[in-house]
Image (cartoon, rainbow, N blue to C red; front, side, top):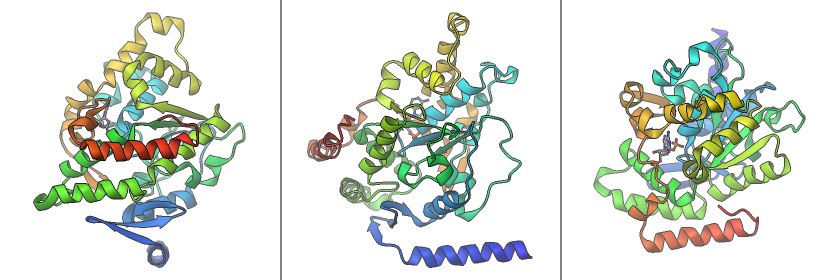
Length: 329
Ligand code: A3P
């Protein structure tokens, strides 16, 4: 059919394009560089398809993160905040009790546009639409970057790279992405490469600084949050998030304990123990066990994983990369 022909052409075009990109092999992973950032081949196919075809709407909300920076939590909180006044979204009946946050708030490049496919236009009819991405700010599609008053709101959640790297390695390990016979040397190789900027959606500092810069230039469009702040004082962060999204909590809602209710609904403890998050897989380019999105959720867990010399190297790198920009991660 003409449709299949079109997809084959697209496939060939992507293959041609991919072949010409700079490559870097890191342990079992082949990375390719596109516009200054690194991806594996299947993820990159989703990235370029999203860049080419995604058209945002004024009311859209885009959640952006580096992998393992608390994306799942941000998805759950945003979904709960934005939909809270709909009757079918009361805390006791929330869709979050029956579906994984990644099913309720899809990734653009890892889900909707993965492998070069285009999303069904009939999906996501409820407004506002909430999407997520790990794609750097510099590489988002044009309609997302236009700074007019109608462009979508973007929320970026940043996490200390030491914890994010630690979380990523556990995630790889739990999803069978590290060689069972030689995990330690693979970890060391991933660590060295991470510090040199060779990681998926990395260099991590350029990804973080892109959103940081955008949040300074355009603070009503880009909100920059820290995982550590969210952990330390969840109610303040949740209220700030709601206000930024144009749906701040009313005094009455606060008096009713709605903020605490939503926080409890989205807590690691609650989500982790739900049937919908314990069993089954998600097909986000790679096959991921749903349960692996929920681990410890601790700030500073890197001390149990990185050696002091690894920590020193990464901390030094952060100081160097972020100091000159004034960004204090
Ligand atoms: P750890 O591996 O340090 O425990 P992402 O959602 O971006 O993939 O990041 C996953 C990290 O966020 C994991 O960190 C995970 O435990 C933590 N996390 C997942 N859900 C959370 C929640 N509801 N509250 C706090 N942290 C959460």
